[in-house]
Amino acid sequence: MELSLFYLSALIAVASTLMVVIQLNAVHALLYLIVSLLASGFIFYLLGAYFAAVLEVIIYAGAIMVLFVFVVMMLNLGQKTLAQEKSWFYPGIWRGPVLLSSLLLAELIYVVAQAPRVDFGQVVDSKTVGIALFGPYLLMVEAASMLLLAGLVGAYHLGRPLKEKSSS
Amino acid sequence: MTQVPMQHALALAAVLFSLGLAGLLVRRNLIMMLMSVEIMLNAAGLAFIAAGSRWGQADGQIMFLLILTLAAAEIGVGLGLVLLVYRRFQTLDADRLNGMQG
Image (cartoon, rainbow over all chains, first blue to last red):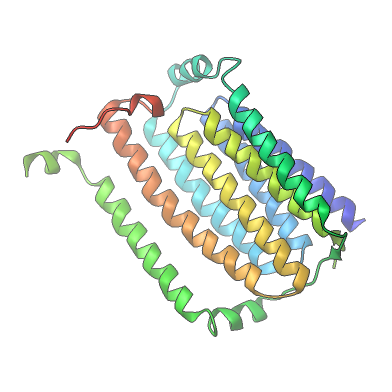
């Protein structure tokens, strides 16, 4: 039963990711991406990574997607961009990239299929994760906070008004 | 918990990663390219979670947390750059951005 849940959510994730790639309208693609991330979150839950599943929903499907929606709204992409996208997405442009990616996928699947079959699914609860996070990985947590600070400062620097820059 | 074959979880991560890669190569809209990068990062996180669940170790989830942090910082700076590009060139076409001004 739970195995079929895994396959169902995997199917949803793959289908919605495919729709993200081929969707012309940016907002529709974003909504499909949210569905894909929620399906991945459910897969994390099924694999026993509860903490990661919660973070996937809160940060990926919540915060990062809200950022995307805000930027799409600020850029005010309307019918004009839809026609533009349609002209960019003519048949034939996808042949090379799809060929290369499917070759890569075939290689990956081949390598993965070589390994002996192992059934798994051990629960790693958030207590263990927290203890590891603030024990051996403490320095990495600090480095991640530095990275977030750098991202914040960089985003602020890029987002300030252009006029100020040209006058100075 | 569910007993999932290891290969199938890794194969799912591989499929999602390839889809993201194909999207990154095919699309010309900068926002779509950023979305494809997100898909690829998420697929890498899925592989880490599967490995962590396979051996019952917390390291997989910690790596996923770091990928999440990286994705958040990357998307903040990336969307700032997209806004800047749109303000300067009035377009999101990645192919139009082929000139540099000293």
